[in-house]
Image (cartoon, rainbow, N blue to C red; front, side):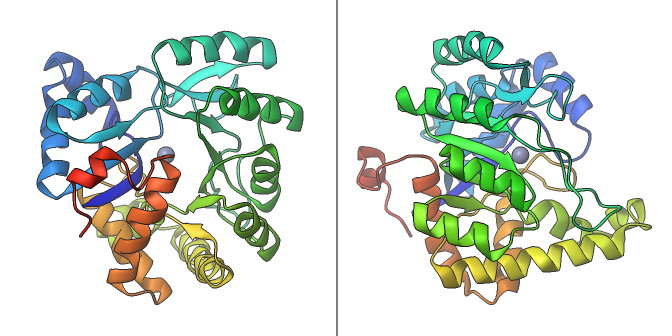
Length: 303
Ligand SMILES: [Zn+2]
């Protein structure tokens, strides 16, 4: 059994606008088809990073009927006016968050997803989209979720963003580009799971069409990707729990195949495939807040 702990079922890696139209037109049949493919490839545990349309919530119901464990955040939370509008609902501050959090709880979200920073800037090495929430706001959101027993997944890049997320009590750090040893030590100490999502950049570097699309940025992308591999290697040597999450649905990362792409990119850190699959299950389940001795896993042998 495999675990992909970072996907977006509302995106298709190619033309997500079209994909979203197709999902509604065909009454969620395309979601069922994708989930059946996941099942066929033995990827039986999935965690969604969110969308603004609530598609991951419907996917969770369909997944349950297929015997797949599917964790949905309801919607991700992003700061009004900043990055994240296709992934969730905007909040402008704590008061706003309280309302959205009530909605998230109403739909029985499995985790809270917070988008703390923007994306990696392919034009400028080391630059990422700004930190959107204050320390106060982030801590409030994370602690609110924890009080209700929800694990917290934070999208964060840059040393400053990731440090802030760890200090606020995040359970998992998503992406985490440009990390330094300091944040890696912090993650190891606090048992925070890191989901480095290698496939979005790794796939650009390997795909001719995407390479052409980013031709003027490709050297920078390679440098960023190589730096990320080095950070993962260091993280593993320090005992950080690193998990496999493909970010399937983002440009160039296709559902199901994305998981195996992520595994292939992980191998570039010098880890064996066997070790990666073991990490994917153990740390993936931890990322999902799942008990390794759960009834589901007793029935589903880990191979
Ligand atoms: Zn994502």
